[in-house]
Length: 409
Image (spheres, rainbow, N blue to C red):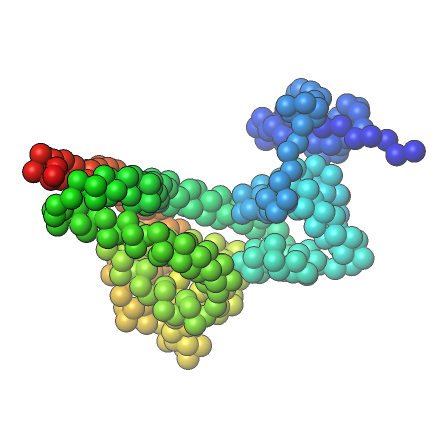
């Protein structure tokens, strides 16, 4: 009969004396102690976690099993720590398959462990799951295996993914407020047109007389919304499904990505995000020992913008023909002159990876500053717009009432 597993929260000190906390599944507390010690950890405290009632794990289909970039960053850092502590890759993967909280990722790690056990290299085993592990991670791990510094590469992968997660968080924080306010404004307008304006329209019709132009426009919009509203809703749903299915197609990206960089206010933010992502990924891969041409082919696809992707192709053609790495960059306006000059200096001094890391850090700070400025700018602007729309509609509705005695017959 199989032994039931329990969930334990632990606090341990690693080989460097750093306090590390986490969760692990095991049959009992002694098994947890043995497993942690086999990882080179010194247990400080181990507590069983209740999984009943309000603390029971809630699984949402399609969401609970989603593997995020943060999960991969944690996986890479834990794997690096165990390899650096002297554990074999096979043993480290076995431990990760048991203790990884994301069950979908834990299952995949178990499959990777089986492939490694049969003689496959780690990069090859991970490469069997391209939907989970991005090319940047696979190529860096391959370079680390060849060069004999796999633990260092995994740390670089973890730092890269953590920076990317942080960057995405900044962008989401900047976009959430205006999107929410815009949605509220649309719902308020539609609600007034569908439910409030018809009541006033019937009252005005009973009073007789000619309505002011703003009120006539509002009543006309209300009548049109009754017919066009459902059509717009269906069209919006169809477009959302179409966009989710086709947004990554090259033909769509060729048209949408350049427009992103030209959007008022947000265009500069998108540019800084793309440059930060490009320089960080490129610098990380060069530092890991990935050949430049191979790195360029990968970072172009991971930059998130087809404009950067085209630029990397020009750079690759330049390097392939024996010319300068940074020569073609000046032909692409998406790269500011400072980026081109700093990369040229890094290329001349042989410290391109360090220079790219400095550029990435600079643009991370620029993204943070820009998002804060946008938030402080958009917040009062959106409130004013929302108040102006609703206020205008209310005034238009009450204009006939100001002349109510003239309308009564």
